[in-house]
Image (cartoon, rainbow, N blue to C red; front, side, top):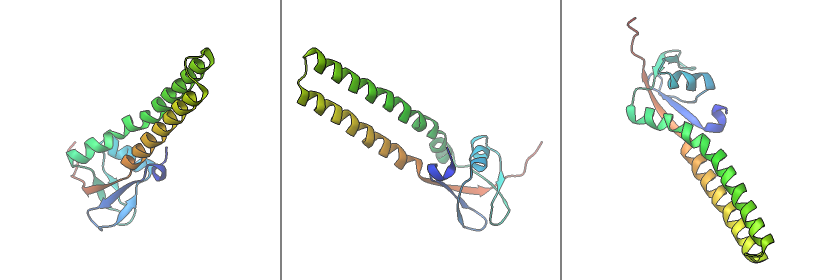
Length: 129
């Protein structure tokens, strides 16, 4: 998944510019390593615990789409079988299918909205190895 599809931006503490983070920058944030700003070439790092927690929660949001797809396919198949057996009418089966698809699109839209964020990147602290 690319950074453009994630919509994660970073706000540089040095030059005060907002930049779309590239995958390698997202990887650096994930492993808590400093990286250079593409505009001012100064070292940046994400230090805010609240933002770090929200950034790390993106992993669970990515799994949401796959699990929703499996759930909706199962619901559609169950509704089709129940209609075939005669426990649901055609209209009820269609309503159940449309409801499952509607819930899928609402949840995926919510997940996409949560993925768009701007991280406040601070000046990186010097490494003491």
